[in-house]
Image (cartoon, rainbow, N blue to C red; front, top):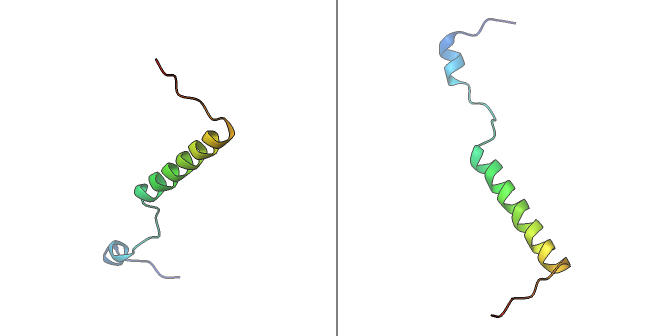
Length: 48
């Protein structure tokens, strides 16, 4: 093994997860839960 210099360290691009990807997956999961809840437990509109 050899020691990596600071210039080489700055050029390394990692495979990190973007916060937007995590937020997108969270939004999709919440939407699918809402669709499932709407089909399994439909609520009527209250006419006043």
